[in-house]
Length: 257
Image 1: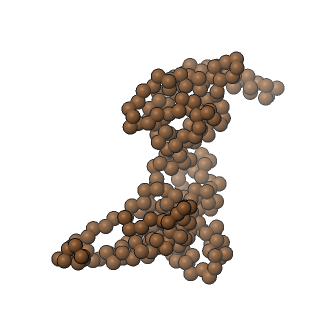
Image 2: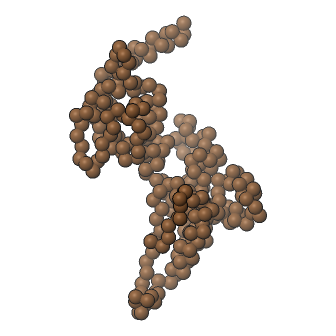
Image 3: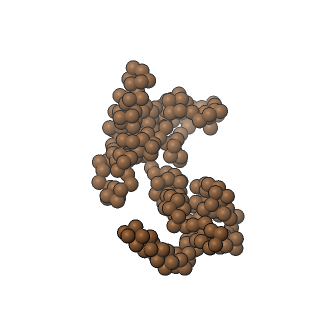
């Protein structure tokens, strides 16, 4: 452990670069030279180092990227805009790829801008800011940053949260009970009361899908999609699909009338 941000609030990207500079200085020394004399080893010692950034928000700050909320550069791999990310045609992945060399050049352009106002405009246009990692000639800032599974698959715009909350709960595909009728969530809650899983797998709140159940963390979404949801959701669809289809048709008939 070489250093930790002082807190108490989360540091900005610019503040992190002050800490990162010390690490990059050491990495530059290590590059091309592996033999060192240390106080604990008077003879030459071979040192091997690696670089790992396991958390997407930290990766964006440390590697000079914008995050998924940026309008023009939400992706670290291609030049898709935020507006073009979600339509069906975007699944064909035909957007131009970003390159490490281009990203590095933009980082250095950002670095020499005279004031913060110019830097903010540059970041708004390109979605790139300065990172000390740009000084590492061997480090490809685009190739060596990978998709973070926690945010991409569990909390991000792809599978678990989007499908479970945005598509099922917010659209009332899975509904809470009414005073007169049991709905889809009732079946899920009944199942969760009897569902048993190993302690290491975690446990979902009993009232999942309702305000009383609270927001799910990444671990709980992982537990849901790999366990109970995979079992009970097909049962719910099979049991209620016929009624839901009929209700949808009645709604269409009223709309057309």
